Image (cartoon, rainbow, N blue to C red; front, side, top):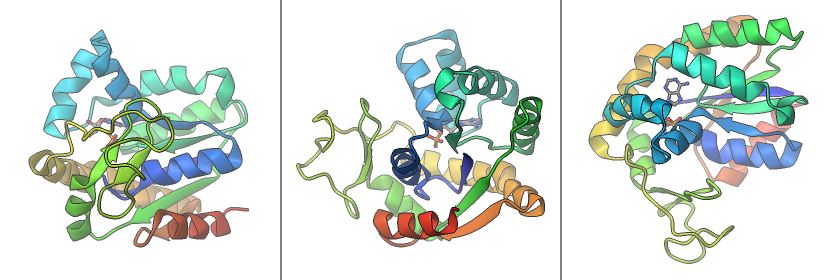
Length: 213
Ligand code: AMP
């Protein structure tokens, strides 16, 4: 099964992606997590990507497409995967379609998680994530059991560098210009499912799971 999570930054793609990954035993592939790991390791890719990430802009399509071709060729992807943060442009969506077509596969579901823009800034400012196991929390809506400590692995939680108000505004505008056209793109292909992203992670997940066959 191949699932794409679409939605603005802060819509809950990462949280739902992890829950789906557990339920269906499929890898969750987050381009943002892969890029942040490259930045942390100071690789050539990380150095190039960081310039765009700091500004809330998209990393060039060719870089992302090459990176995802490698990732999707890994053994753990043979039964499918959950994509969080890819594709983010029509060019990336076309490239994904071609990659899958070559292997006789196709996207099964595109979940468009919708949250009103005014809620997003507050959601993102409360977001804390685990640098180790990538679990995501929110100090207002979904806090960890112990303050600033990951429930799953005990590591200290961090605020992402690009989760500040100025960069979030730029990421939202990038989303509106470059990524939101994908909603129509996938609606036309008949794979789009609209998901109301308001409510608790468990409620949203219940709705998602009820829509998957
Ligand atoms: P995310 O964790 O998905 O919010 O991604 C964080 C940042 O990584 C984005 O603001 C972009 O700069 C970059 N990024 C992640 N995925 C992509 C992608 N598919 N295409 C281009 N840039 C991306």
